[in-house]
View 1 (cartoon, rainbow, N blue to C red):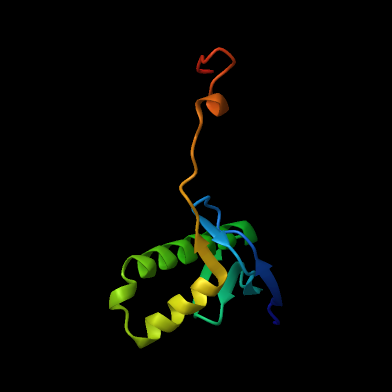
View 2: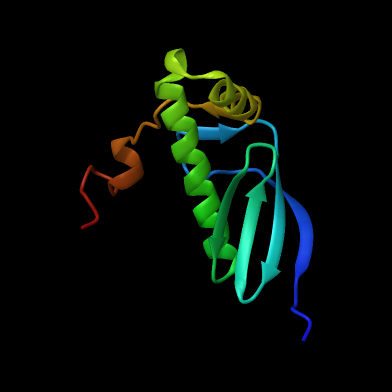
Length: 115
């Protein structure tokens, strides 16, 4: 019996956090088979998986966020392979300033909190 497998490529443009910005779209291979979705960034051998496409995307975004933050924090101590991975990530992702939350964005007029 033949499995239902879809192979395609998408370009990832967001990581689901305001502290990291995708500056160049990230090529992602999408595969579906045996009831599971797998999204892979083959350039750096990282992937996310899930029961549906949204779950797999969320898993991949979390993986890329964690990898970028971890490598960024220890960039002075990286070996050759991880330096290559980090250099690739830096071509696609950059840190942004921590977003400010202003009182007027969460308060009702007059400075009252809505809760």
